[in-house]
Image (cartoon, one colour):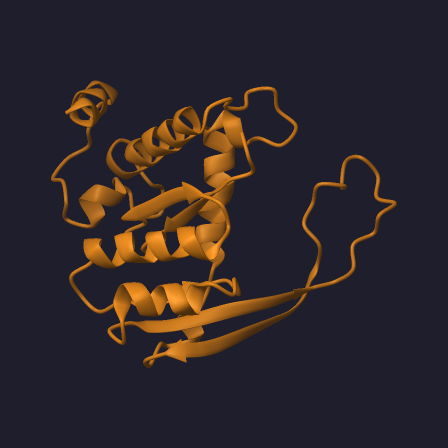
Length: 190
């Protein structure tokens, strides 16, 4: 299976993941992701992203001018190629982080990618297929995509989030109560 990643949208307040797409880190998948996200939202939002070059055009294609959008551009220090095995897979040190307004009037202090970065960590911890140096990989793209979808459905509807003390779906007003795993399986099968 070729190298893929999960594009993830996360609401910082409710922790809800309203949209995700699994695909390559390219303009095609960035556009598909932003179009899907825009279809799922009814109000004007503030959107933050990393510095991927395809994002501004993708955001414009999905939201038009009806979005407050900013990018967080991080500059990383040089990595030490002679790191020991324990630290070899740690990220490089961030030496500079610049917030840039791309569209609209975003609150510059809220231009951040930290919530999604934490969600990426959570996804890696809960979805064994994403653990580094694992033999639990997916041989088929469809199986990988289904595993990620099941993870996010569980995250949104079943798992109580510690910061909000309920599920993200409850915090967003989509559901009134927790789903059980049995309800998740039943509802995802429909």
